[in-house]
Amino acid sequence: MTARLLDGRQTAAAIRAEVAAQVERRRQQGLPPPGLAAVLVGDNPASQVYVRNKHKACQQVGMASWVHQLPADISQERLLDFLQELNADPRVHGILVQLPLPRHIDEFAVQQAVLPSKDVDGFHPENAGLLALGRPRFYPCTPHGVLQLLWRAGYDTLGKEVVIVGRSNIVGKPLALMLLQKRTAQNPAGGEATVTVVHTRSRDLPALCRRAEILVVAAGVPGIITAEMVAPGAIVVDVGIHSVEGRLVGDVHPQVAQIAAALSPVPGGVGPMTIAMLLVNTLQAAEHIDS
Ligand code: GUN
Image 1 (cartoon, helix red, strand yellow):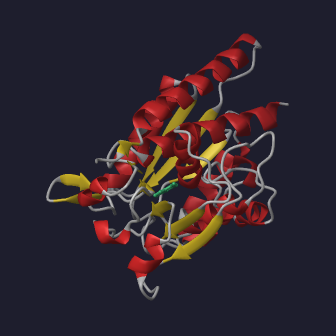
Image 2: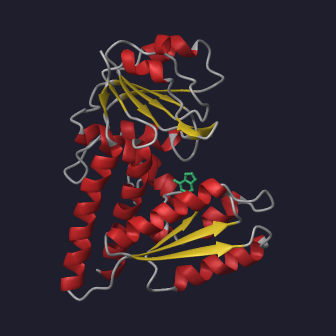
């Protein structure tokens, strides 16, 4: 048996269509388009691709989008000043600073400099805190993309054994919080799972992973999850993306497709979902500001 494909391209396209309809409704009401400012520091090739894809997605749904490419040697002070300008710009509803940043820049200081109401990544400590307390403002895009990919494929996390491989601030930690949250009428997707977070230092990673009915892998190590680490019939979501010998691969070894009931591909799985959820957050930011 090979696993059912969790098609992120198709699911993301459906979400973009929903967002585009809301952007059009705003236009008919005489409201300005939601606007996203993306800040790219330096010339990391992968980051350039990600930012370009985010920009294209904004244009596709009728949003305003600006890409600010800043030199790799920009001082932290100048970068923080630049963010203050974006904070004050009424056309900009969402601000995204692409990670990773050059080593001389303090990532935490940058995340604190973005106005929390424009922090569509959900990285500001105020927004991270609100999420932890069950009062989310913006769901971080990648974990939200994972939950939407599962939900829209018909997989409910309620009561399920979910194992997350990876403990990053961008994926593992916020995903764990989201999987614990109680569902609401506004947010019926996800939550109410039994959550285990494991990582590269966990003892007996294979045994822990085999407990999962739903396994989400965001370890950042190509092919780390092999077939013997997956329970037959598990649902597997691969958040990893790596360029290996000119090909894009994930954290999940291809042989897992013979064991799992469903698997998200790389590319074409979580990646497009992350961008779709960024559009959702930018729309939400605009709706709050204008109302
Ligand atoms: N780098 C890798 N993932 C992300 C993300 O979700 N947001 C930003 N800003 N940078 C990233």
